[in-house]
Length: 296
Image 1 (cartoon, one colour):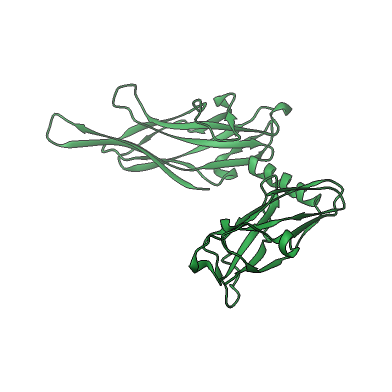
Image 2 (cartoon, one colour):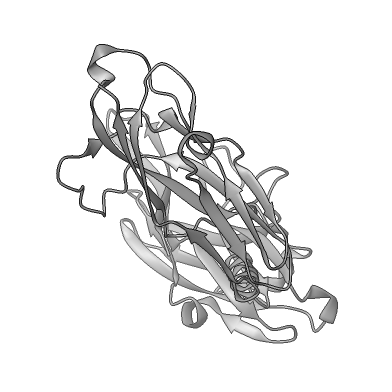
């Protein structure tokens, strides 16, 4: 839960030469509540372990009123929709008189109607603390509350990813690919020249789509003696970055090397990696290590 402090301040020039300050600040986390069940009432102080704190930063006593509203169009988070009815959430108390430079705490109570159609939906509501009165000198601060009836977007995404991984059964080999005596200044296809490639074997019952991409050396892996990190990972690429592999099938991916023809690139030993992942955007934490040695 990220800490957030919103504040609204107004400095007033009074009839006297003294300056007066009025202002409110909201002490409230970025609240995200998951697993909400229809027909139940939740105290956010207990469920999310965060009270709504409002600070009167002014020089005088101020009445603070808590109000709720739907988020403005374009002002709600990805995967969330505006709350159908802001009256689902209430503040206890809904107003409070605060002394100058003091903080008051409010408990927010969320009640979701007993409607099964609300399951697996994600809502956002805006919480506003404003000073009492309707004059031009009123101030207000606003924050948001997000909640999910059932699992939240992140939990759902993680569950989908886990189920997808459980259905997978494939292997990428070799773990280390050594390419030696590679000429500079020309596109060099390792599969054609030395019959070396990356092989993807699919043992699952469903077809598989694998994505590959060249990448810099993984800093978590110690560099072998005599090798340096490749100056540009783009010098090593896949002839086809997306590979479709049928059930019980092995498909080869061709690696193509194109090192610029410069004197400083001759006779070098470089290390790089090739990432492998799924078309869904999930990258495996098992890169293929590529060791490249250019010809003199």
